[in-house]
Length: 615
Image (cartoon, rainbow, N blue to C red; front, side):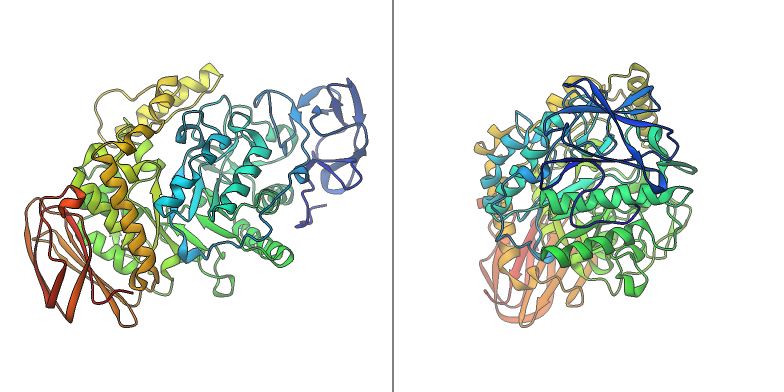
């Protein structure tokens, strides 16, 4: 085996056009492999093939049947490529026919990446019921907000019913408590009907701790490397071909069988691979083949704690070919600019000076010395386009990895929240919102798990406590095992009807509308951009241009009014938005029009946009 089939899923249990079940299991060290059909209470032996694969074709296994794989007549284990775990990570697998779902999105065409305005959400806390089905009722809200892409935090099966998703142990299996595989297919189908692209967060850098049985079957892990979350996945050691195929098929499955539009690949800097062709590059190659066959377009977006363009450069330029990456440094610089503390890795950032560099260069550290890292860090990204970088003012990590899970709404003023929103949406990069920020959600988003292993649960508690020592935080972190942390993290949808939350929601809608309709903002051209930083005033002036249109962004991060002068002439400057206007719960209205050069007194903690013409 070890050859990729982009047309269909081959690993695990699948059903062919004749209704027969095909089982494929990789277990190179096994002497004997059977499949145990639980309802019939019978065992059927598999036949050994080359490279350690075992295969079977049978009419005795049907969709919805539960089964185990049995190794050497002794150990009954769930399918590593299981599609359903109705009894959780310690229970048997359930066979599913992925082709049974009747799609109606034939005419769907993926949105160009440059048009992505992404909304990151956690399925379990986005709605009171925490399911894919209940999420569908909120899709019109997201469309009305102006969102174009919905990003789901990981949905692969994890232990229990409460988890961020990064502890998944069955990469092919959709979390049962969310609704399972067909419910996810239905959600994606409905999203496409409403014009929304779907991004799925996947984890290829580690496997969760509880219920992880991959190592029982084959050398999925290696001792050559380590990760912060446990054993490293074996992408380049002995027997790595089977591991690589496993994860390549996983990526293809989401695109082909679930019609996912983009994958957000978690912490790829923790993937260790010194193969001649990096696993990310090989995934990209296979996705390209899939696109040629299907005619559909798919994107690969990576979370990357490295300022290294090799990941997002095309293969012909020596890169891995990923379409875009998250840029945490923009977030860090914006956070410090807003007056928040500079502890931990935030200590490397100098407020608006760093933010201005992020606007200009994408990477704040592109070869300069990082005191936090104690070394020179990063390379320049001059030739990379704006659509290759995803920016945000908050996300699940930077909220939930705070000890208490405070959102920006709890950490800064209402005015500063509006300024931070404008700073993101006026950038020449892909903007992302974290669920609830658009209406200034006041509830916290905390870290939560539901491990049933008591030793593991205690280890998680101790690990969280140790993590916060680096930030010199006093007090006790909420118990991640407690149901309270999960319940408190659910959105409070009743807030959107109440002031000032309804005002913030309207403000976000207007910002997104402006970004879409003004070509100087929607065209992500990093070349036609200029940024000035006035450290003594804590003011940034951002100029973006497309053809004859110019948009001027004026950001005052200080706590007092500041005089600004922009020496760019236009017969008339039209106000697009001013966060200080009374309409947005501000203190004063700025002029609707200005003539000649822009001279203004910017109110404290304000964001303002003027343009030389309407489009």
